[in-house]
Length: 229
Image (cartoon, one colour):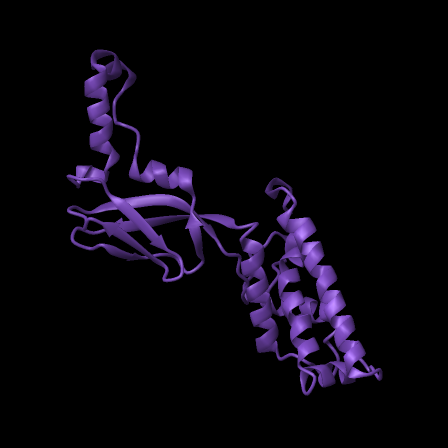
């Protein structure tokens, strides 16, 4: 059964104890905290996805996928510098100079350039800019690292790691409640039938946020990625 954003909102509220009749955070705020948490988690446990950019002659700027973090270096290098199309039998008959020339010729897609090509990725703008302007059309097929997402259909975070992926958002949510004395903190106290003073409640929320932040550092940032769930 797929884990949807509705399931994640319920789990998130359970973790921060904000699932009573009176709630400190709206569903929209919780959804944003979940998204923020997933983006932080993805910096250490991204997912790998394929993409193909159809380069057009005369066009230098191209859009990147919405969930783009960065290119996967090995596959991108293979895309812009493919191996020479020379069979082992041909290699025996070519001099080292000829072999090198063939490799350099095919290194640039379709031999479309007379000078070195520069591929500049701008993640904040989700753009790729190619300099100089391509002289011919070709496809760049490679892998990239992507942010994890969740929606009404499902969630891309591995099931066993969902709690870890939620942690950064939970930390931000607890701190947002702890610092909003006039509204969020009052709703939080009502929803949990808390009668102690505001300052103590805020201090406890901040302490819990600090603990969870240390947990995320220990279990995600410092743990080898090969151990991810």
